[in-house]
Length: 314
Image (cartoon, rainbow, N blue to C red; front, side, top):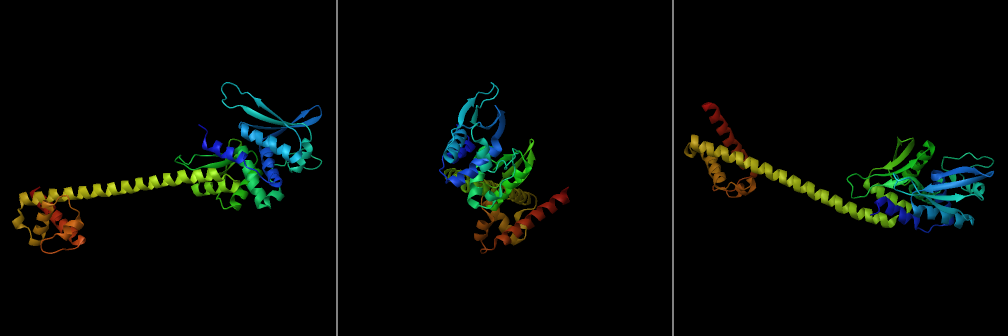
C-alpha cells in the first residue's frame, strides 16, 4: 500500500499548470535533485528520483517548456536498496535551460543555491516552487499517525531559509533545523499541514487529510471525555464507599441514636441509598430538599465523627 506522502506526490505530478508556473516547479526539482557531468566536452544535466511519477513529470515539463527530448532511464539498486533510481538526462541545451531557470548565471557554471527573487516576488510562482520542492525533497506523515509532521529537505542553508520564508508567506508557521548534512524546513501543526497541501495544489490529499484528522481528533476527544467521566465516576464511587464505611463504623461503635438529628438523618439516607449521587440524595432528604453542598457538609461531619471515635479508641 502506497504511503500517504506518495499519494500526495502522485496527485501533484498530475496537475496541469501554466508554463510560467511550471518553470518554477521545474527549477525546484532540478536545483534540489540535479547534478552536472562533463561528457565529450559538453555538460550533461542529470536529475534523479526514486519516484517514477516525478521522473515522468520532469521529463514532460522539460519537453513542454523547451521542446527538448530528454532521456528517461531506470538504474537498478543493490539488493539492500528496495527502490529503483529514475534518471532524467539532458545533454542538449543544458546551459540554456539552467540559465533560463536561474540555476546558473551568465558566464558561469556555478550553481545558484538560493531561490531567485522573481520567484520570491510572485505568490503563484512561490506556490509552484514549493510544489516542486516538496516533490524533490518532501515528506509528510499520514494523518493516522500520532504526530503530525511535514518537511522539505535542502542541502544548502540559503535555499532552506527561502523555503521557510515562502512557507511562512502563506502563514504556515514553518521552522528550520539542521539534519544529516543538510537542512529541514518543517511544519508540525495539523491545520498548517492541511494549508500547505492546499497551497501547492494537492486539494484531494488535503480533503483526505482533513477527513482522517477530524475523525481521529473526534475519537481522541471522545476518549478523553470517557476517561474523564470514568475518573469522576471512580472518585464518586470511592467517596461513597468511604462514606458508607464511616457510617457503618458510627452505627456499630456509637449508634445512630447518639448522633445529632441532622447528621443521623443523612447517615440513614446514605446508608439506605449507597448508589445515589450527592445531588440525588439532596433531593430526597426527609426533612426537605437541601443543597448538594449541604449534603456534602453533613457527610464530612460524619467522617470527622468517625475519625474522632477511631482516635479515642486507638
